[in-house]
Length: 38
Image 1: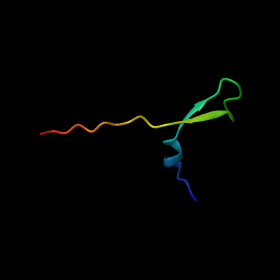
Image 2 (image 1 turned 180 degrees about the vertical axis):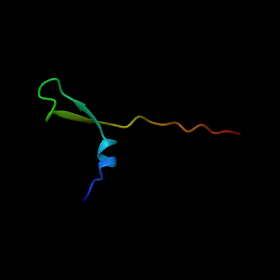
Image 3 (image 1 turned 120 degrees about the vertical axis):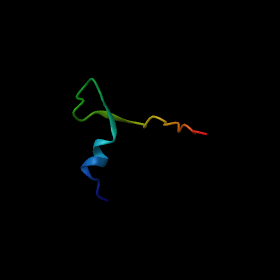
């Protein structure tokens, strides 16, 4: 599997306070609610 630089940049990483360079959490993307225009 190959991941492009753009795809990797889109991943939301939350760095830990202790050694955040290798300790992190992958956070979910926020929900986007589409607006329906009549």
